[in-house]
Image 1 (cartoon, rainbow, N blue to C red):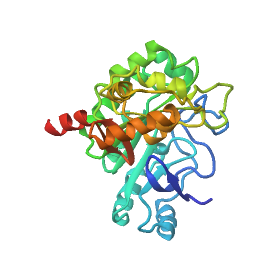
Image 2 (cartoon, rainbow, N blue to C red):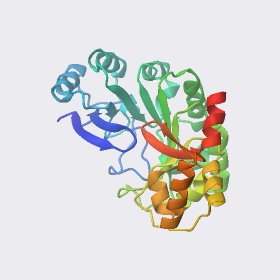
Image 3 (cartoon, rainbow, N blue to C red):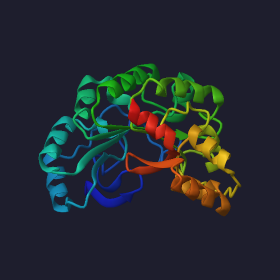
Image 4 (cartoon, one colour):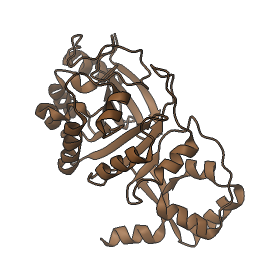
Length: 310
């Protein structure tokens, strides 16, 4: 089976050419409730393995200078691939100006070899759906002997030594990890991390098990439960409903002070008159635009000036 797919135009990462390290079947150490793939028994190793040379040869046929990122993923967990370190070395030889990115569930950061391999990538996206043991095991349904406490400590350590762009993704499942208690625990961990962006989302594809996502409005409310210094981005739009609320100047400034918003967020939350007020605030240099990991956010101009002054 082909290991290369795309390119896909990713709103968060640009034009992405994907590498599927498990194209034949699902091989994962999690059996997440929300997974778009069918339920399957967890594993701690890949038994169906593609050669590095096969991957690289296929990639060379599709790689060109219009690709922003080479994205390492899998039908399952890509870091279970036994030749990951060798693959990354080979990618770095041929990537030229293209960035390398991996999408991982974070669990194998406890493995020193995997930890060090990921340090050689340009971008890393780590999933962290929960930090309390009971919620973690209910949502992510991990393989035996995988403990969230160990994963969290490695995520913290990785964020402090990694030199590339680090993204954290949290996927919220209704009535599981969307409680104020779990969000506060997540917040406490996130405050210890050095990250480019934190993407919060919800179920947007048919899940493996009968669970539900939260709405865009609920995600927006959840975003305000995190510390305002955290670079939170609402990644999911599938459950988005127009709010079309009226915001005066002070309310716009207060909202953006608490949580920077993208243009998509503005379209969903503001009515037309509020958008006109926003435009005037931008023209009057009260609000600035800031690019963060391929996305553009509206923030208070004074906040941007304060960050530049540090």
